[in-house]
Amino acid sequence: MIKLAIMGAMEEEIEPLLAHFENINVVEFADNKYYEVKYNGLEIVIAYSKIGKVFASLTAATMIEKFGCDTLLFSGVAGGINPELKIGDLIIADKLCQHDLDITAFGHPNGYVPGGKVFVETTKSLREIAIKVANENNLKVIVGTIATGDQFVHSTERKDFIQSTFKADALEMEGASVAVVCDALNVPFFILRAISDTADMDAGFDFDEFLKSSAKNSADYLIKIVKEL
Ligand SMILES: CCCCCCN(CO)Cc1c[nH]c2c(N)ncnc12
Image 1: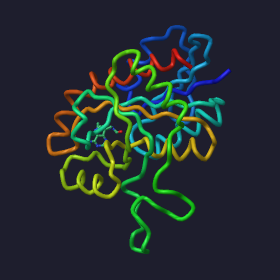
Image 2: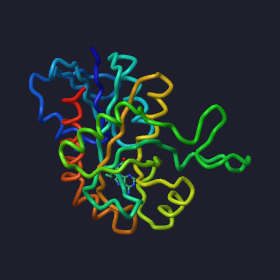
Image 3: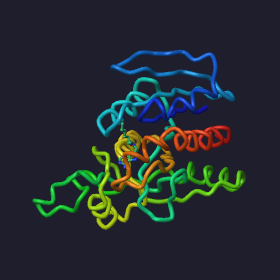
């Protein structure tokens, strides 16, 4: 029997998820709120971390170490890099990296530190369930690389650096840290994002306009996946 963690970074990313549940028990811990529900015979813990890699690491580790979750699904929005990704489109990460982790001064590649690895792969079996659900629901999703960093990217210069350095298809601010935590703790995980902007000079405006609708796209798809677990 799996105990499922469902995580987002912002309240707007989990609000459309919480809407599916009732009898929610709220646990306050480490400056955050964890929402416990039962659904389809599953025990689920839902939380939003707050923005950025540090908060996301704290929440992912807490859901696993304190709440005993043994599978983690992330739902949220992202900036699109791959021109195939339009606002509202869905991307499933097959691997993730940290675009702002940089000790290149010592000859190391971008995104690498000793003992770490540039790319962390997500769990294949969870991706396969997600693809099956997408096919059954006629949903267009792409599978690709997501780059994570502690900055809201709103310039083609930074976007182009991330694309050329990591061949990333989308970018955001939490996924790779969730990946490192789950990988280290041996917990299967899945990262899903819907595009809210294209990380260029219009990113801020587009993000404000499309956060809600894109977060709902991601959440609605995630719920369909949860039903298959
Ligand atoms: C109040 C401002 C909240 C920004 C949080 C954005 N999330 C971070 O995970 C996703 C995201 C969407 N578009 C992005 C972009 N262009 N750069 C970085 N991250 C993103």
